[in-house]
Length: 328
Image 1 (cartoon, rainbow, N blue to C red):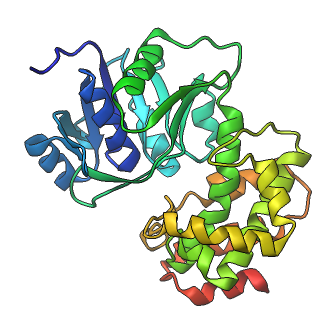
Image 2: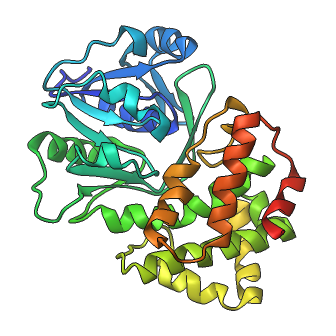
């Protein structure tokens, strides 16, 4: 027997993360409304619900973004990419509780959000239906952007439901920003390299030049965050401080990349495929790091912003040879 809905949530973006979270909440009896621009996903979701490969199907409501009429006090989980944030915020009243689950930094969005979530699991959704695969297990961290901000009741209830019913682990933290900045360190290394080459995450660790650049990005990103005295937290098996220490010895980093590459084979970062659509989140990743760095020389992040924005503006097809642009 299905549980009667105890609470309701609107999830904007029926991608990998949105579908995984929506599935977990629907499993716990929540009334889940999925808002999506892709008409095929909406049609399939209305007929078949949300599914996770190997787990099963959960019923949910679906609507197209253009038809969405949010209520004033809705709980909104924002699972879009950062370049879609403005269109979403234009629809919402100030009384709506907006909780982003995004990797990038959008200062306008942050100014109205007291709490955020960061996902360290990898979930990849089909292009035309709300069916996703968890390709790497991990956590969903939920917490305030300021340690003085209490957890709203609705968000506390959401966290409790996900902890019991979701396939991923759910962790409530006192401050979400150390986790978000740690995720930024990794995404701002993986994102531009994957975007300009079309390589998957595993290939970034097996291709010699790509791996070398990936390690260089990680070290530059860590240096920016450390010099700005920004606290970092553990995302994955190691704290960023330990990762940086490992990368001081290139041979050790190369040896450890083998097992990681196998676990990442066939998975793609959120920026993959965006260049040919003409817009990316590079300004929300690498551009944000440059803002933190201010006048510090950051050659890899500077090159990333320039190259990715140029390729997106010209709809340039990603190719392996684009790695040479980071070496000049």
